[in-house]
Length: 196
Ligand SMILES: [Zn+2]
Ligand SMILES: [Zn+2]
Image (cartoon, rainbow, N blue to C red; front, side, top):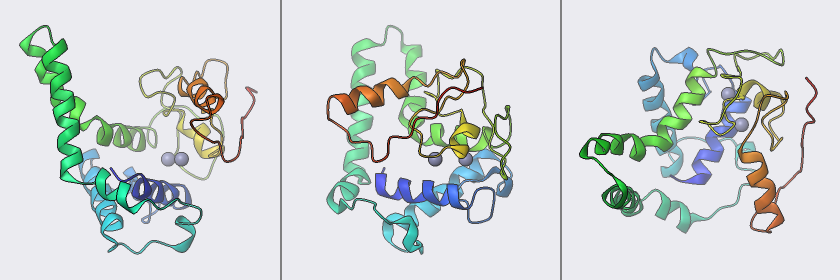
């Protein structure tokens, strides 16, 4: 997928949470698949330049047209599917395991949809906000910290999504490690201390 288009959609989600301009709000779709379809159409519109994007959503966003074109191309998608298939051929110990292959292939799209659908419907709240964001689970290892969604809406710039002692964000130390290796730069290091 094009990281640029995804970043624009994510900024729209924060600016227009739970409204009709939110690219993936469960309040405006009757089921998760309809929401995914709506998100897909907005995403394609941004990539093709047919969806009007407000100036503020592209501010400071790096433009890598060649990378975006490659990331969105059928060749790169085909290459990923081939790599996943090769992994299964090498490591699968039973033919039944191939039933998991479609899930692996579509995991990127589903992962986003799972968070945006369920974490705007169910879970608990640490911060009272003017939106429906919830923390989906008490300990999140499967979604790699992303399901602490109420925390994320409260502190969108924090690289640690956890705010309570049991809210372990497994990606937080990885970000710090990559920063230490100087592979990534953190634009604004905002870390919310564990307070609750
Ligand atoms: Zn959200
Ligand atoms: Zn966000």
